[in-house]
Image 1 (cartoon, rainbow, N blue to C red):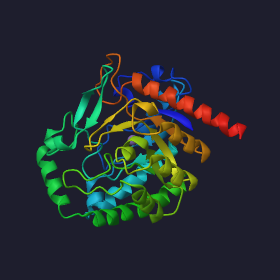
Image 2: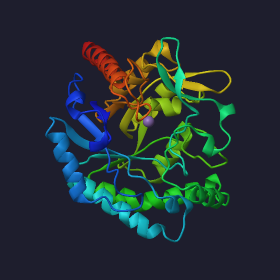
Image 3: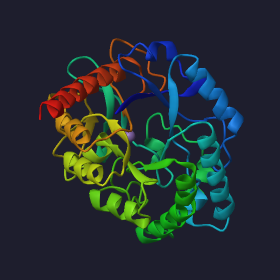
Amino acid sequence: MILSFRWYGPQDPIPLAHIRQIPGLKNIVSAIYTVPPGEIWPLADLLELKTEIESNGLKFETVESIPVHEDIKLGKSTRDQLIHNYQESIRNCAQAGIKVICYNFMPVFDWTRTDLAHPLPDGSTTLAYHPSSISQPKNLPGWDTSYSPDHLKSLLAEYQQIDSEVLWKNFAYFLNAIVPVAEAEGIQLALHPDDPPWPIFGLPRIICTQNDLDRAVNIINSPANSITLCSGSLGCNPSNNVPQIAHYFGSKNRIAFAHLRNVKNNPDGSFHESAHLSSEGSLDMAAIVKTLAETGFTGPCRPDHGRAIWNEPQPRPGYGLYDRALGATYINGLWEAHQLNLQIK
Ligand SMILES: [Mn+2]
């Protein structure tokens, strides 16, 4: 396991020098944020980012994420050029020393919450989701979309023609074009599950369960076609047994990247992101990390989101330094304990 931390590039207010002070933290997870979706990530930009990260004593081997253009998901005639660009971005990442590329195949919306500052009894705030608060995309707080209202409207209309089986077909078309390139370049693609793992706003979502992930990895049976095990995304559906999912894909050597965070699920279908500790949420974090250790996971792993604590400003909700750093040290503790256990056995 390579303990890693997401950093949003030079515009991220958290200095790399502070991230480096988290014990055992070796790697940065980042992306090129200045290039619009669908365009090629220039090698020069990747190398510049790598140089900055390395000059702070850290490594850059994991990309999260190269966005997949909506025309690819919609299966439009423009997709071949866009897929060609995606292939070029993969090649440029490989040249810059990247080993893992995280991506998702969620239509229009990335991770979705209805409350970005849900108060917890200890005085911290966190990201939360309540099904009754979700009706129209425009009602989402802090929604940062690159789409204008008109563009969004036309995209949503286009998706009216797309059901989940068509989306699967378009996903397979995309995978068949990019997995061979990743394989040739020595890169592992790491499909992130949908978050939350159910359809929203009438849009299909297809990467929600163990079966969905299994269908995805079986489209092309190659380690280059792997998954991101995101405990929090999968875990906010209580029917997803995350330790079991970790065991299933870990045993097949198809987990390329792990996101570790805890969620507290409520009977009404709402949830909030809790502190990482198992007893704070609904997930058995110790069992998840134990499974990764026992199945020989060697890839990057990062604390996913964190709460807002100690009055830290949250220009990017979920991505402050303090609580993610606590999560990182907790992961360290679990990992060390399980490594010791494995040695004793
Ligand atoms: Mn995640």
